[in-house]
Length: 210
Image (cartoon, rainbow, N blue to C red; front, side, top):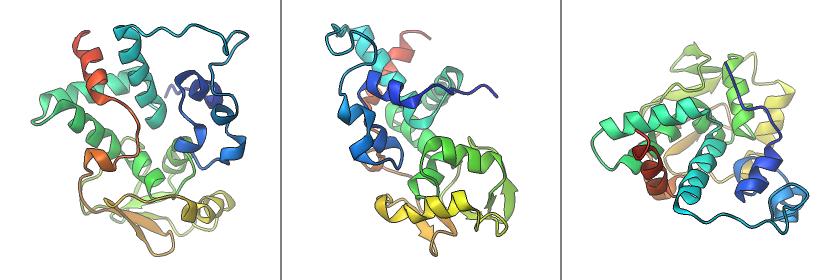
């Protein structure tokens, strides 16, 4: 599957999102906090566009960065949210937050969305007792995700769990044991989702292009 594999530090600087906000990085070494301006030769003095289109595009790009999505995935989630009852922006955020890789990250079982996706793709987890390897799989309240016993002692997993205490686990996620897994307790409320985007702008961006 296609995937964005470029340097994430540059993307974070371009969008103004601290890298430490989306992964377990040292804030003192965060490229955005150290150089809070876009990358490139003229990044510090560049004139930033503030048009309505630019603002909405920026919010959409931020959402893709937070969840590690491709354009097709992001647009597909919007179309599903628009067909669903309720506020489209809120439903969109709930749909993305219920992804398996996103919840693995929220529970602190991985240090970044990329690592969470890698863990899932390599079959590190079981969902309600069955092995899963689809990062976009959407959980429902009550679902339990646990590391397979054979993977729990891997160095990368232990390193991720060692950093778990530094992460704030949202109320809709329950960590099982000392990091053996997690449970989705309920659907998240928008204010609980630690993703700093203006979702009405994202809805407007896609609505104007549908």
